[in-house]
Length: 151
Image (cartoon, rainbow, N blue to C red; front, side, top):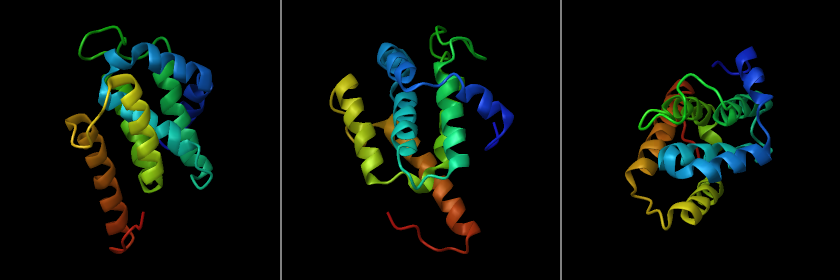
């Protein structure tokens, strides 16, 4: 899924805030913390008015794909069912890495605590998603000439 591609727009039409919360609440335990955290980061980041329109379309595309009842790997399959959804969400999170500020992460972790109980920041699933974000930010910094990205 490339930023702003037709595929993004196709999946975006399946996104609604109501459907997002319904699916996430219903399937949070099956999807796992990593997918839920990536979805929540995407959801809270897209609320930020400084996120560019094209990036928001990518996010909505990934969130629409998550909500879609039929996708490449059926969600009901144990262990792998949400793997394709996670890949789409991590791609979307990567497109907005520079917009994932402390407030976005705290909102996502707060919602996770409601569903999973207290989630320590050193949780392996959280760390893996955060590491993906850091790698993307590092690549952006290097491409921009090594400047730092203040948060």
